[in-house]
Length: 349
Image (cartoon, rainbow, N blue to C red):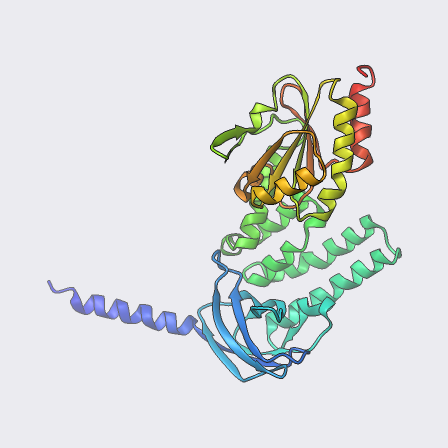
């Protein structure tokens, strides 16, 4: 029996379905500054974060631009080179998307004219109102989080099957990991798989697996022909104060004097201070180590994959380990460091 006609029909149906799903979109408007050059459309719904198209801007005005896509996606509109122009949170969808000139502080809601962009602008405006009320002292942090939760819930429920729901969830970290996981599970499997949500979920799971009271997770880093393990320091009978830091991080540099003071005060009482330099070339870390005359040992050249074991996506992040390797505290900063160590070592000075 010849199956060729059936195969031909099936291929034609697949092609028709693909064409039915595809859509056209236009981007028009003024970027709000005297810029002439190319802007690039980066697909942030795809794990590769690739530029998928470009459009020409002349004296701040976008020339008429039309594109095609198979499904709505989150994009960043940006320039390259010295004249940096960036407009985040562009929802590419069918229709004419208008870019309106806005202040830098509100560039996250600069697009309008299509359903997802209009809904996002409404959410973003209300989100900013909550933040302003907190910044001005009119509401407490708890009240701000309650308002944020009430604002976000209907948006996520209404957009659980599209990328807007995922973007709203990505703005809810202040609600805490437990509530954040509730929101992630509201999203469809497809939206849970996009990078911003997938990475957030993995971070939350890593934090839960390395929460206070759990045993440390080991890792290994190769540098200068040697392999160094976290277990070379942790779980060896001493309290270990581990500082995940980077040379380009201002708050990290401000914590270093606190860590040096802790090292000098408690090194003879059973404390090991350990620097863990992340997300940069070791040479950059070594410059700071020399400039600040840091006396305690360092693990250099730690990657995002390694910090992901502890769910660390921002530095500084300081963890205190017990002598046997149990995690005693996470996120220590400033005066908290000495207070915690004082409570441990006050009888051992």
